[in-house]
Length: 244
Image 1 (tube, rainbow, N blue to C red):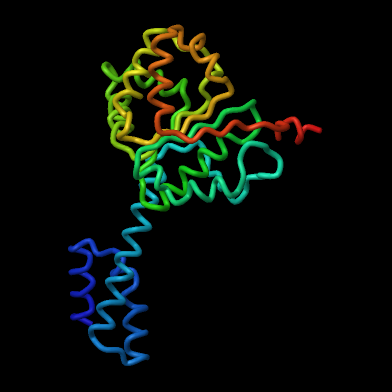
Image 2 (cartoon, one colour; image 1 turned 60 degrees about the vertical axis):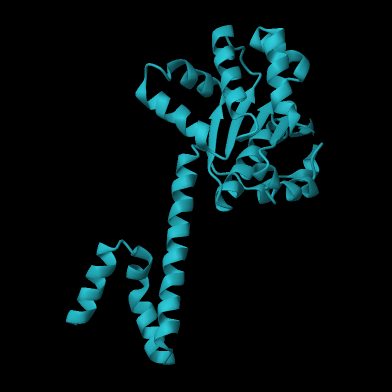
């Protein structure tokens, strides 16, 4: 018993939590199957790696700041024109994240643009990438407060380091020119370094009015579209359908 308790203490000291939680199970398995020492050790190491991977994924999922969890498996592709299961399947190899390309979803409200972006974000986290989600209104506020508020500055610094930034609901509210300038600077900084998903209910021709500057908007779109896959969605709003 002394040796067992000492082993638990050593595992705890080394922070080998995966091994610690499964030790009894693996000991019973090893004794029952009469496995070799090497096989027993390998099994413990596999459990430790699995535990660390799961904990890291949970941390990254929490850090992604997703408003809710949406699954791509629950998306009704037959209801929306402009994107297919095959299109999404191609996105799930995540080569576009490795090459820092962007994905843009356009279309009227209620078609599931946010659902698609969150679903891709969840899959990216599960694949080992880091993700941040922000609605454009929140992102602009964070950029405005980053210099004077510690939490906002911390969030913006985190956004600069992620593999994928999801910017949701561009177009619902206009952006003041000063804030639009900060947004442009962020996009310029992330250009060819971080992949971006954007959802918007406004076409490109409306962005200049929303940003208040034609030249800056053109430069912004140039960076977003240089390496990008664009999906123009159409169909009936699922909210209107639900009300009916």
